[in-house]
Length: 91
Image 1 (spheres, rainbow, N blue to C red):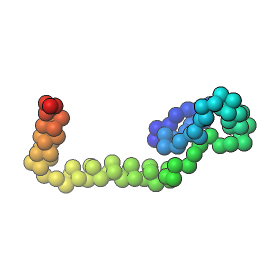
Image 2: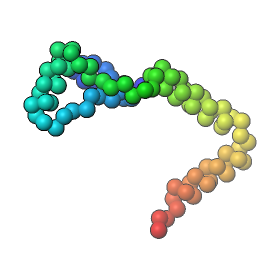
Image 3: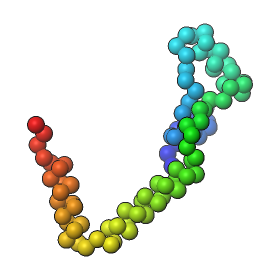
């Protein structure tokens, strides 16, 4: 899981920070409130981090299982189509 360091605290990349006001005085007050612990610096995005990590793990495993299940001719056909799309000249 990727994370960003904010003041020595590791934050998951899925967490969003509290919106910052444009007014410098309000921004200063918000910074003091965050520093003193009166206001949390994170906004709940509605996603469960455990479920997000489980979904990612399942997706990675699913790709391997699909590759093992497909015959080599079909895998080659899919790869050829992807390469054609990738290198097709743009209009």
